[in-house]
Image (cartoon, rainbow, N blue to C red; front, side):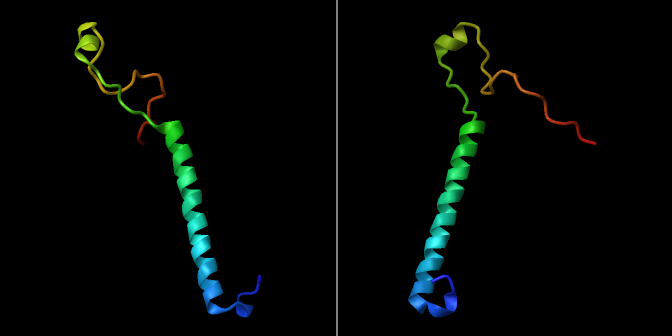
Length: 71
């Protein structure tokens, strides 16, 4: 089964389709885990939070390092 010459054509097509599906699923898992670690959704501000003196900026407070300076 490892040697593709000994397989019928429909077996090769099935294997190629399954490999493509496995690659797609692996990519989706990687993207999902990346998105969980880097997702920054803005907090929805209501009139009550704006009246309490909070900033109306959709960005989170600057708690991270700044980007590297360009050379």
